Length: 577
Image 1 (tube, rainbow, N blue to C red):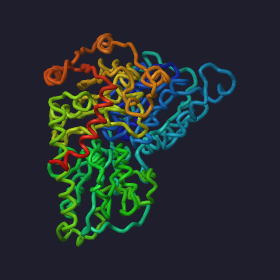
Image 2: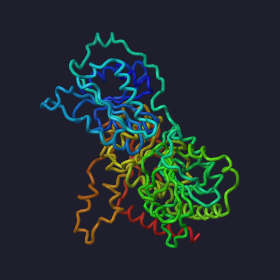
Image 3: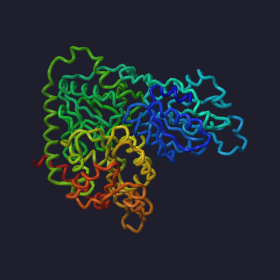
Image 4: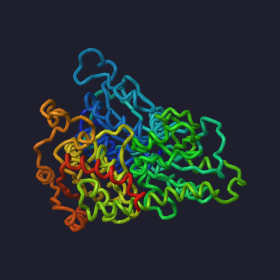
């Protein structure tokens, strides 16, 4: 009780509880504290619980706690811990454990769980080996405060923390004891992580400013900052573009597409395929956050010549897989720009910058017009659906995109003229193992969300359907059912002759699962979308349900060929306009 109450005083509001006996004291304390403001959810699957908390924490911008029992339950937290680590997401993982006297002697369900998450966490906290009950209240409070603070500590990226708590018997309180328990004061003081702006993190390198009177571009990668810092980031970027005239090459996960105050380029992945190489790197490139997924853009950035700066939102780790040795500024864009002398903001964009921006704008406009013509009304397979979806979804409705094909189609073929919205994809480690549960967490945090996913990713996390009974928000799942792993069709794996390799069995792995029936078994209604013309009406129905599934059957092999053809034709579309 003391530990959870201290966490609540530090700002913890949400806890996901998994079943177990060794964690009984934590479960009972959570049940009592639910009447004092703790938002408590329960989950039978530890992996799903951790991914739900991950989505909730990403959307809320503060840590969510997950409580498990001992043994293999802790091992199931590892996939979410890995994503939280690389994705810079605050997460507090609390495991109950056996006391030290039961370790290494063959006692049931006793494992070295304190080490399971070591490679991925910001800090590992361990209670007294004789049991948490052997610690004084002040010691417990200090342990709780340190654990929570470590999820968003100054000088490092937000991330996961593992708090391992041995408990000795007796493990469970009786009814009268629970009714008589004295609950510590739990008024929230919002200490958690202090909600520090990235500006509070000093730069690791003392680097000169870009020359604002030269031409340049901004490459905005996936947003990994906390949501409470988002507004300042956008305002800083708008100010920078007005002064420099530099175009912004905005990744589909940057959250910048659809903002009318910015001049953006969304089609860089297709434009950089043009054989004449007209769009050469400018003298300066400002990179914001991790690299976009586009391999073409990565090759373009690796071109020798341009000076580059890499600005992250509070993440001092290396985010430069290109090995460009560019200066790294972890203090965030808003913090970095605020440190510049005021005189640098005087003046107007240079002629060279305006000409470069015009060249990008002309090509972008022609490309997007060509894509409108080539992918009309949601037809055109998965690329066409990605383009139509942005237009059909209401403005500001959050979208969660699964890894592999869906996120790449959104980057290349999404409509930049569609309304702006928060876009979430969890590409820290780019797994597919918790997709549905993550989306449920985002929907719980923000009230409503849409998930765009492939069939294998959805099946991998089918326990996520169990959240429908306690979601607390609305979630629409749009399933691209292409009979297996569509991403593998886009890689040079198939052989000639085809019988030399069993492609489906070894790579695509189609599964004979009726997803609509599986969702219905969990109490989730669903419908099949019959072509692009049917998408709008079915989407309107689904968005009114607490939780719903829309299945769109596609052909992964035909879509792979369609993407290749679109790229081939798009590379010359603007020059023919």
